Image (cartoon, rainbow over the protein chains, first blue to last red):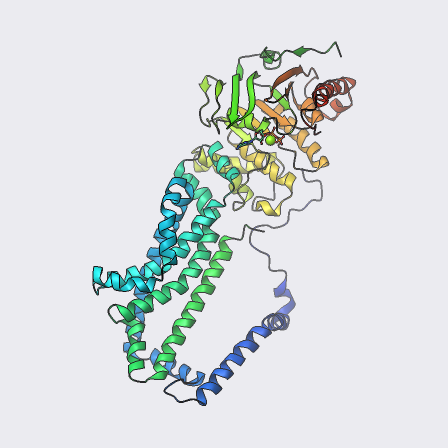
Length: 276
Length: 278
Ligand SMILES: Nc1ncnc2c1ncn2[C@@H]1O[C@H](COP(=O)(O)OP(=O)(O)OP(=O)(O)O)[C@@H](O)[C@H]1O
Ligand SMILES: [Mg+2]
């Protein structure tokens, strides 16, 4: 029992370590000290890109400034926005599908050993198969609609989620499952209260890996199935020797990928805040 | 030593002496194998409705296994366990276990961990909101409601585990070396707090421990497990008066009983079957 004069510290949300009291200049110097290498590297990269772009033919490569200018123009182009939204719809549908299938299936595999052992070889084979090689097969099976393209994105994205979920859920301490049993938890409550909260950070690790793969799947589907979206834009621009258009589109996809992965990392950290 | 009452293993014991009524737990002829390893055989004892039975035995003699069988967590091979009139085949309502490893959910705060048992028991929301702070206070964790397990010491974590078990209002408490992983001082504090809580709301309790002092201090009877496969070697009545306090530790009778249990365990150690851990 805490003795007299004992004060319980505030728990829960991470503390701010009093940064706000020390004022803006301090914040700024801390930020700079921590991130200087990052910004130096980024600036150097942009500089090399700029120089390389300016000293080669515009048919091969455009400099950074030209790429950004083109991107700015795209933002005001109705056609670009439409194609962008088209791609976004494909990406999100396939990606969300991968998440809602991969995560529950992963938990199920972790819980039912026989199922996992039975299905594992097929999963390993599919995971190891270059998905692009499956595209002709999907084309002949399902044609040119939206569904086959979603399937391609799904296949690219589902395995990292599935794999990380299974591995995560399997690492739950059996003692904690036993605690749940001892308190007469139902199977559903075991999933909701124990398996899912424990596995969420692992699922998010899978999600981050899936983001990159889903973007690849999106472009592959748009290249090799019916040409739509950003994939079509890139192909069209490349056929017209519009190198700036190609660079701007690819640059945008890269930015979105990095942004989504950072977001995923933040969510992962949020769900993992109970770890020391 | 001869003045001490001891009961043969074949006799389920004098539970009534301490409880004054029907036994709450009846363990009859219990036997358990893990594959080819026979852990224990022929375990017979009763626990009264308001009785604490302490179980001591060397490491690996099957104390945890025995508690898991009684809690209905694992199947056993022979015999039966009755809690009240109910045969145990799976965990039953009204029995709560406190684990050697605390068993807290690291992603839940103290409040959420304490609420867990109540929620699993389907308690209404209002009752949960009323009982959780009550039991957090009872175990001395007030102010730590929002702490995560990693932010707390071992002693505080086990207080939380205790609150979670007590909150469901059990009539049977199964304690598996609950204080083994905390430092000596905290352990002593927790022992007396457990006694205080038990005096307030007495339940049937099985208390597994490595510590002879702890067994004698808490138990109305002490069961000594021995052998390989293990069985009940002796059941020793602890006729120290209640409520037990720090004074109890200084009574000559306490020392006598402690020596009695000690020599029982040592006799076994001399048979070189196990290394005795105190
Ligand atoms: N799940 C299991 N599978 C196989 N053998 C087991 C299992 N659990 C325990 N054992 C074995 O059964 C015996 C009894 O283990 P148990 O954990 O019950 O001992 P214990 O008396 O609680 O020991 P301690 O005092 O160290 O906690 C040990 O030899 C142990 O190796
Ligand atoms: Mg044990």
